[in-house]
Image 1: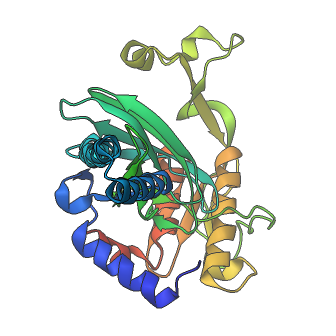
Image 2 (image 1 turned 30 degrees about the vertical axis):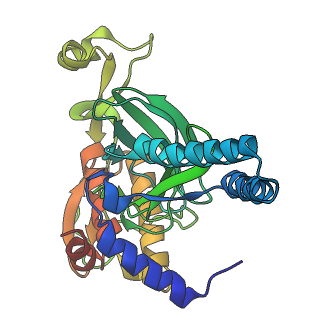
Length: 323
């Protein structure tokens, strides 16, 4: 049965007050809910039926069985609740992807010195996983992103029916990840000309030998003189330094040159252009109404531009939401 939108909104507001979002959440009495499962209600129904029969026929053995079933149910309530009580859920970050893609969310479950058994965790209609641990456990869950900006996946469910399956205990947890989701990339539009009115002429680049442009994974055909030995000493990963030569002009990316209407579509086109320029080692800059980034190349420049596009028109609003 589907609940009306007004009831869902009221429930979310109540959850926001009872279990506010944070980078780490400890599940205590005020954050855990528990009810009988379908099997639990059936168990209680059978216990009541046996009790009525015992009272009617004055059967001591039936009374004993009834009290045993009720006692077992009461113990199940405590142990099921205890399986979640005191556990801490910590946000460890998420991949920075484009809107519409699935990001991998890193979580850490801390047991706080107690063994946890058959804990199920995940977002509604998304990937869920069951795990058991006695100290701490790192999990990676997939979550589909919807819009650009700060990653706000909503509440996910932590639940358990251990040990007997007669009761279900759960909590709705909302974590702050403080990571960005970039705009969706639209690469169907051609790059704008680098010689338009108001352009600042500069130098475009191709692969070459003049200036450093980043690193990539080492190939067996690469010259050993281009290996990033300092990086290899730090991380153990062998990468090759990339260099570039100056051959042309810079490209400025502007909203009014995308050929589409609507801020989201315009940002999507510019994001696609940023990726194309990065792949082709073409210096590009952003000329947005609120901010201007000078043309450059490299992974750091790409990430800076994508971050600015992700927050274009949203920075003040979403930053306030995270305080």
